Every structure is written in C-alpha cells, then in structure tokens.
Length: 327
Ligand code: NCD
Image 1 (cartoon, helix red, strand yellow):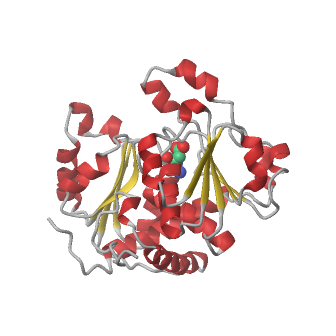
Image 2: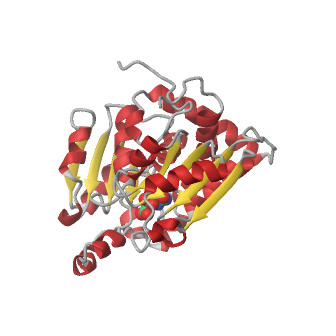
Image 3: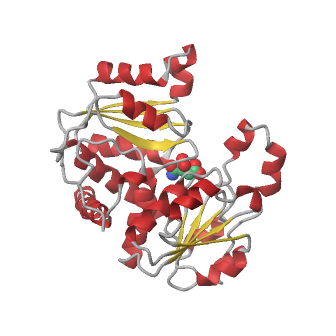
C-alpha cells in the first residue's frame, strides 16, 4: 500500500495523479461536510482572512469560476478574479503564460492561483513558474481535478462507498477532461470498480489514458448505450466538446456525433431504481430536460458540492500546510 501523505498542504493541486491514497480524499470529504454546515447555517467562517487568491480563467466557465470565487470570498480571502483572460489580458499582446503568472503573483500578492487554460500542460507550466500553489480549474483535454473531487463527493453522498460500483461514462471521452480525472480518482478509491466508457468510436478514450487505468480497475468500452443502462449504479453523462472540433476544423464530424447519445425518460426507465445520474454540466442536448425531475438526478447537487469541496481544498492548501513547496 502506498505511504499516505497529506500532500495538499502548501502544494500545487494540478493533477489527480497527486492523490495516491483514498485517505486523502476521505479527509477532504470530512472537511467539505464541515464547510457544508457553515454554508447551510449562514455561519461566518473567514479562515482565510488576510490571504490573497487569484482566479484566472482563459476558457469559458460558469460553475467552476463562480464556485471558486464564492468559496474564496466566503472564507474571507482577498479575491482577484479575472474571466476571459484570453481576450482581456496581455496574452492578447503575446505575453507568455509564465510571465503572466509571475505578474499576477506580484500584482495581487497572491497566496494561491486558480488557473483554467486550454493547454493540456498549462498548469504544469504555471506550477513550475509560481512560487505559490497553483490549483487546476481545468486544463485542456487532460485534467479537471477539482471537478472530479466534487463528482466523487456526490457519488459518496449517495452510496457511502465506492467498492463494487459500476460507473458508465457517456459521451466525449476523447476530448472531455472530466471523465478522465474522475476515472483515475475512482481507481484510487477502490480496485473493485467497473468503468464502462460509452461513446461513438470517433470519441473513444485515448489509449494513453486507458493505459493509466490498466490493472487498477475493470474497464469496458461500448457504443451500446441502451444495453449498459440497466447495469450501472452511476451514469455520468458528458457534453460533446464542440470547441475542439471547431479548433481542428472538423465541424462536419461534430454534426455526425452530436446527437448520438441522448438521455431521455424512456431510457432512464431502464435504469436501476437506486442508480444516480450525473453530469459535470454544461449540457447541450445530451440530457432531455424532462429527465430533470427524476429522483435519480444528481447534476444539480453536484454544483453545490463544488462549493463545499473548493472551500475545503482552499483551506487544506492555504492553512494547514507544514510542508513547504520545494522551489
Ligand atoms: C466541464 C469542463 O469545463 O471541463 N465543466 C465544468 O467545469 N463543470 C465540462 C464541460 O465543459 O463539458
């Protein structure tokens, strides 16, 4: 068994690969439960008073951006939040990500930076540059570690375990970053988990990613959505990532796959009574709005879980650290 380390303290959080033991996650969940109580009881808990957090987003976002801003603000930190970095920052003039990170560290006296960026290795680059922790708010097609923490937290709220679960991840596994991060974290929680990726062949999980799961969990792949539905405990729907098709000039391919996997009430009726339906959101058309009232739906709860998880994570990174980042 790998040695347990409480590695959130004063560390970057740029990849789920940094988490090697389920104990780290369970501790974070306990902490998130505490944050939940503060929020629900409107309790003032300004533990990060005097700390400064910069939140820099180079890609569109509603949930991740607003919940990081809300989490940092509720904890009493000074918050510098800039949305639309690709359009309004000196990146437009050709400034490198490294120089921008150096700048923000100085201008805001930040104690941590939350970064969303289209580059797969953007957070790695930022972490190598910054003398303070970098928290990944989504990097390219590769990683979305805080989303997977809140996804995991949501699953835990329903099942109180991970052992024995069958999780289907549906949609765009090629470009989507959330199923990749979630699958890797599920593998940390239990080896007795089955993950079935359901996607059109054009959007299948990259081999390099599947390799990272090899021998850790049971993995299956199929295009047959209907067949998988009655078997699963967790149905994790995802959006077809139009922006990457656009970037590659492959919109005719997007048109071919965009309506292939749509969850409608008739399909939900095939699912187990106790199964849960998740989605990181935003949805486009992959879940019919008529499904929203089904008691198995968890995609609205996921968003609130994001606030609690991000509050807990910010505290873990900024308050309890004894380990200093090696620079
Ligand atoms: C996801 C993302 O940005 O990767 N959204 C989110 O953060 N909740 C999913 C997506 O955009 O499809």
